[in-house]
Image 1: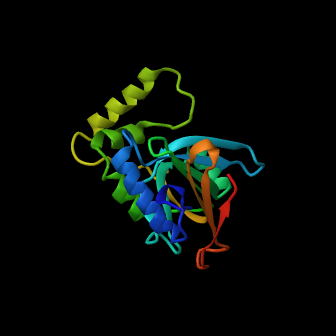
Image 2: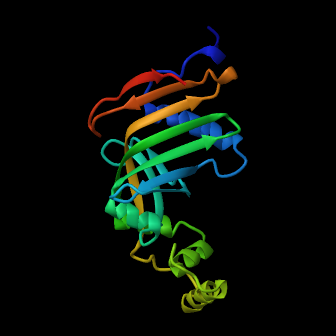
Image 3: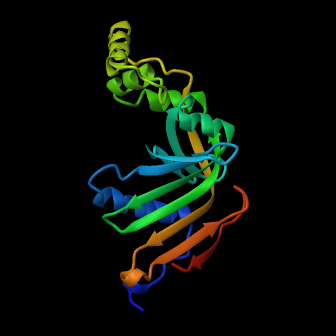
Length: 207
């Protein structure tokens, strides 16, 4: 069986993610770190949107994970706070690959949130601090006026991070890798573990 026909290998899923992510960064024209984030209310009403991965690997938390940042007063933030479980999906069209990840969420520390917030371009800090994300906006000029007011209030340096702007770490219990094959004979391998301290097990899945 040649390389193109071989199955996705049995390995550490974080190492395999790093390999695929590296190839995506070299191949994808825009935002290779973009991922769909699915959350749900306690009564099971789902919603999904695109966010950006800002940290990943076995060094994050007790068992490794995937980090993103958001306004915790947004719809997704409120759903996360009410139901600390989520799913992620990476789809790299140019590579014809995808990775699905499911797990539990924990909030990053204030120090981590501060560090990332102030690593962003100053204009992005202003835009985030001025936004009541997901809330009704009567007119776009209202938002632009708030941006201008913050820029006037803080003419230089970093913008203070709003306390509700924070990050979350998804610690996975399931990671599934999918690779396109001809005639829809796709290749899928799923890694699972019962807890963050437990070893991974794996299986191929029918396409």
